[in-house]
Length: 113
Picture 1 (spheres, rainbow, N blue to C red):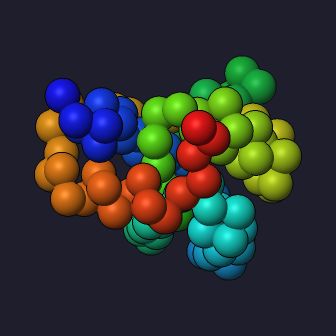
Picture 2 (cartoon, rainbow, N blue to C red):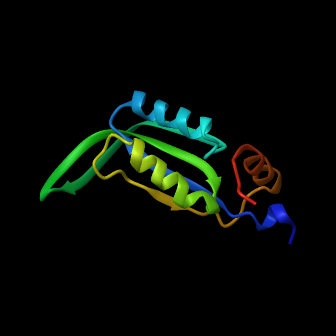
């Protein structure tokens, strides 16, 4: 297994009530080199229970492509800069990915060696 094939990719997702907040977070993640790519998707209807009440909100989803070794750093960063009291933070590891794409992700983020 080559070095790049051993890199575990991670897709980190979170949500926002406003696209402006999602764009700001995306810019910060890219500036800090915590993510190689960030995608923002509007038009998500979220339904959830919060403080004992059912809630329904339109939200904006943010997905950041990074490496699994960055989970602690990126999740702490998002918590620190997120407007929500308790932001959604999910890390999803793809079972398969293109090696060239993985190489590009690695080249765009800071990985401590």
